[in-house]
Every structure is written in structure tokens, then in C-alpha cells.
Amino acid sequence: RHPDQHLQGWRFGTGPACLLLPPLGGSADLMMLLAWLLRGEVTCISWDWTSVRSGATLADFAGDALAVADHLELDDFHMAGSQFGGLVALQTLAASPDRVGQVVVQDGSLTRQFSWAEQGLAWTAACSGRKLRDWPFREQVQTLNHQRCFPPLDPDRWACFLEATGELAVRVLARQAIAVQRARGAELA
Image 1 (cartoon, one colour):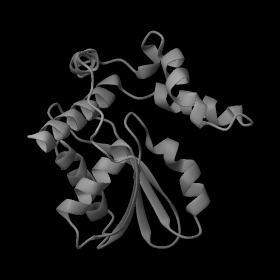
Image 2 (image 1 turned 180 degrees about the vertical axis):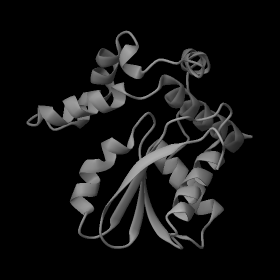
Image 3 (image 1 turned 120 degrees about the vertical axis):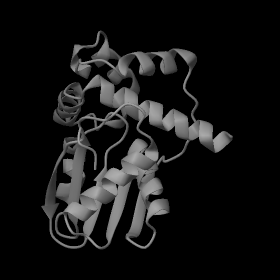
Image 4 (image 1 turned 45 degrees about the horizontal axis):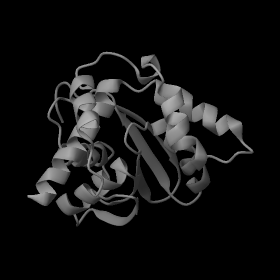
């Protein structure tokens, strides 16, 4: 869609197409377990937003989802998304209701307002060239915020999550957060 935009991802399974949209700061790799479980029922498609331009909105991310569908010559498709991915799925549905079939959204709300500190951190990090793994206390923060959602009997899933999220460019996470905050502001206006 944009000269500076390059999307990387994968397609896995057989059946009707389903775009799997990762959560805020997530990657396509985090969606692979779900794709594995659905492989006999749907063709799962997921991608990473690797070079999100400054000022991107939820509508831009939805446009990327439609561009992926166009590239793969999908006339219609289903979508599933969690948190940020859920918001993008809903925006995509609003932009192109004739192409989107079923949509599964987990926590696709705009109810949480970022604190001033979170907003400042997002704006500062939006220009960073670092990976998330390079940020101080990243593992401790992710452990406090996310580890309780992982099965305690399978530490490999937690290790996979930390590895996958560590590879994320900080600017991508920050620009996604800014797009969510802008959408929240527009919703309240």
C-alpha cells in the first residue's frame, strides 16, 4: 500500500481464509498455535507490521488487512483478532462489510485510557530503532503483565512468547499504541 510498508507473514491450513491479527505488540508467530489448531478447517493468514509509518491510524492498519486480502486474491475472508488485532478487525469490517464474513474479537474495546506516562513513552519510543528485547526490565514487566495467562505446565510457550515479542521493533509497538489512543480520542469526541 505504501512504498515504505513491507508486510511479512505466512499462510497455513486448508479451507476458507481467516486473517489472524495479533494483539498490540504481537507478531504473526504468536498466532501460529491457533493456526495449527485450526489448520484443517480454515486457511490461516497472519503477518507482521514491520515498518509502520508515523501517524498510522486504525484505518491504515485495516487498509493493510484489505491489501493482504487483495494480494492473495481473496474476495471474502473471516477475521480473528485479540486486543489491537480485534480493533483492526472491527475497523476492517466497517470499511468493507461485503468482504468480511465472520469476525471473532477478544477484547476489542477502546475503554482503557493510557496514562500520561504511557502516552509519553509511546511518543518517545515511536522513533526508536531498538528491539523490545533491548529495553531495560522488559522481561520483568512482561512477566508481571502476561505470564499469568500462560499454562503453568508448559514453560516452553512462555519462552516462545518472550522470544517472539523480544524481536518486535519498539517503534511498531509505540505506533500501534498511538493509533489506538487516537481512535479512542476520536470515539470520545
